[in-house]
Length: 198
Image 1 (cartoon, rainbow, N blue to C red):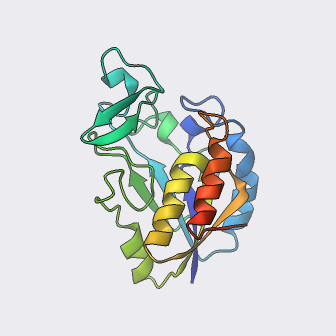
Image 2: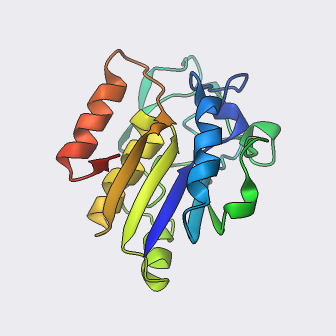
């Protein structure tokens, strides 16, 4: 069985949001169409407490884009975004929630960031997604959403590691591109790991 993984289509990652991905909202009509073809549609939701250590505002004298060591993990600092129960953390109004069968939240531990839908950035703490998919007999995961070079990429890589046949819809993702070439490199990295780009 196949599942569609809809990654972080939230207000803060769309134009006008606090960590907006260029044209992030442009993928929503396509994502809504894709969801109609799957019996299992999982959405992920970035869900940070206000005191999250990945926020530059919680690191004195630091700015977004700077790197720090967070509990032994290299961490890029972000503007405050997707704060629990804020408008920015809500799914975009145009995303059709009727097709979503389950929501997995990530990034709730203030001490570790979480890009992947499967594992937090410590590569140890599970979100429970892999176990859930295996329990309902899913063996293939297709991804869409935001952002190509962070949460989509790490989710796709961890999906492969968890033993799922993994595919990414290229037209239904958009990237941050903090540095030129990041999106292209993300696609290369996914392909090299065995992810099929649709």
